[in-house]
Image (cartoon, rainbow, N blue to C red; front, side, top):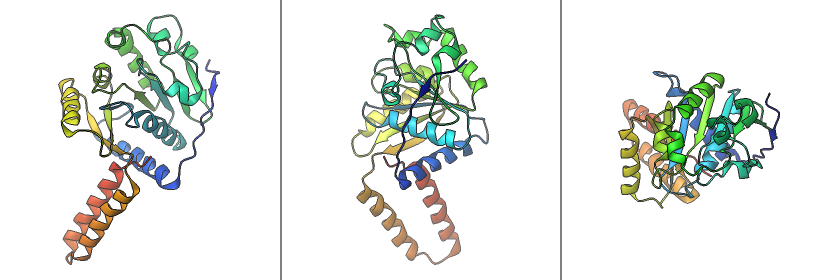
Length: 250
């Protein structure tokens, strides 16, 4: 029986919270062809806001009434447990190793509908652990048990763990820090995801400066002012809606 309660304090500004709601909605739209219940979230490098994105997206899902599980699979540098005030003495590695039952390692949070699973003690071989049949069975089990499972995975530009997890999930989100990541590095990460047949749902452009955000839309608003015919206006509206779903400001 799940008893542990992790306190989660979220104080997001209105535009940021709205951006995560938009991201949540866009993910739900991706479920038209195939039901998306498991998502791997990765980045190219550390410090791009991957964990923040995972937590805020999970909270947004839970607030919408979606029974959500956040799993910390960054076993090399776990961050979710620190944010939620959870211990590292028990978690995913205990379950995969057969030392604990699933209900013993999953904890409730202060947000209704949101549950958390820490990575547990750091294993000496994280990549090998992700490649086991036990981990594959774990993904299948939580997929059936929860409406949405979000896996916080290590940066794919550093280790291969994320690719192994992405191959087992319904989709992958790539978090990119604005103006800091080399295009070639991002392209290499995408190639790694392609090699394992991962489904890239989209990119979260993170830590966008407010001035850039305003200038970006001023350009399109000015462009719209010169459009006279209805067809071009509809094209602009579609583009605007698409870009709003791509940007998450943190």
